[in-house]
Image (cartoon, rainbow, N blue to C red; front, side, top):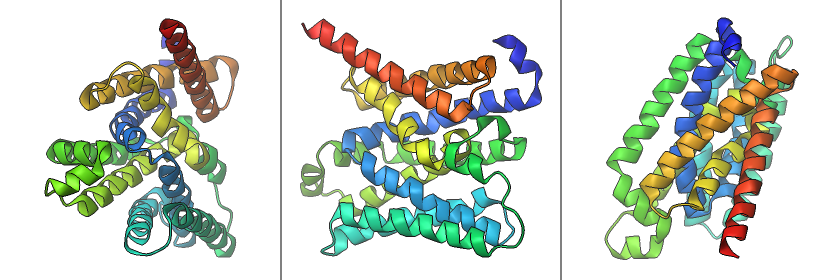
Amino acid sequence: MFEMLQYQFMQNAVIAAFLVSIACGIVGTYVVVKRIVALSGGIAHTAFGGIGLGYLLNFDPILTAIPWTILSALGIGTISRETGISEDTSIGMFWAVGMALGILFIYISSGYAPDLFSYLFGNILTVPSGELVLMGLMDVAIIIFAFFFYKKLEAVSFDEEFAKISGINTRFVYLLLLCMVALSVVVMIKAVGIILVIALLALPAAIARKYTSSLLSMMGYAIILSIILSLGGLYLSYLFDLPSGTTIILLLACAFLLSSVQQKVAMN
């Protein structure tokens, strides 16, 4: 495995795998416990609108995806809470509109859209050093939010009704959680792509939940699992010349299935 680290792009990929794992371990735990995996998928797909806007404005697509995805997350959360529109309807609407706008922006932009495939399906091997810094900063923001609002996020994730009765501003905390999801989505886009990001966000935390009920422990296990499996998928993609994002997700899925089988056998 160590021979692949002689290349700069592989070094960047390994660092990116660590940064992605921090985001998906922390935020993915809340996503799984709160049962908002589908909502997170909607937020992930709306990010394509921000990617397309970047191409249209001849700007770094990741930088335009950050505010776009946060605003989309807030839009989904606000509409589903403050109107009569159901959550799944608002998810579907933002999902479809985000993808449609992304396609439209790319279509009317001048010139060819390079690396578009990597934004959809991911290519962790193409993450430049500059984006590693941006990913690190977004990780820091996620860690800060998780640290200062840990108790409130925990309460809202496990029992929102009880949290509301206890005096917690559940609307604010819920929207904060969606913003954290939006940031984690942008962190993961270059690693596994918009189409596959939901798996990286949910599967490590889902595996971790089988072995602990503590939120903090779940985060730790999810981060470690994500690091191990992401690096494993990266190495397999290097070894067999396979798409990196796809290989990482398939390895995660295999680990989830094995953990489910192991748990069932243990219960019997």
